[in-house]
Image 1 (cartoon, helix red, strand yellow):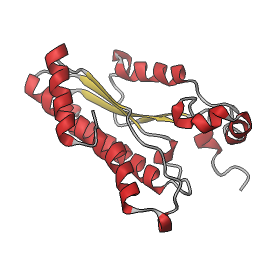
Image 2 (cartoon, rainbow, N blue to C red; image 1 turned 120 degrees about the vertical axis):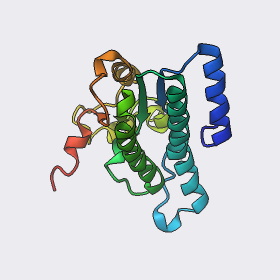
Image 3 (cartoon, one colour; image 1 turned 90 degrees about the vertical axis):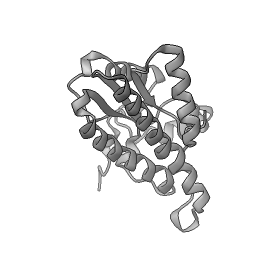
Length: 197
């Protein structure tokens, strides 16, 4: 489904509810990367594409999830929004992506307050560089990969399985008292920004 399309999201949730009875855990992981265009050259269409996929998509999914949880009655549930280190770290040529992820951070925080009475946890998983198709150019070019990991204290990118284990924690009962938080998984990158300045 195209999660930037509100009607497709509603159909997706209706189909999932019919097939499984209920959706207990929502993980918003769809999105588009930064265009690389600086703001002066960034078209409205390209900016909109990132906002629609990365922010509106999560908004539509969260809203429908919460509506269905309320209609079902009872308490509990988990929402995991995948943001990025760029919810906090700006990136020249990344205004479209960075703005969408920063806004998603605040949507998560707002939702955490709104659905706390329902005991629904809402958290962000904020990866740094991960060895997925999202970073295919670096995967295909060892020299580029080596350059890109130099600012990461661990000097490597994350494996997808590492991100998966954190997602499992956030989806489990072990995270029941955690809400409104971002878990950065970045090999220390967030702590290394500004070093040497």
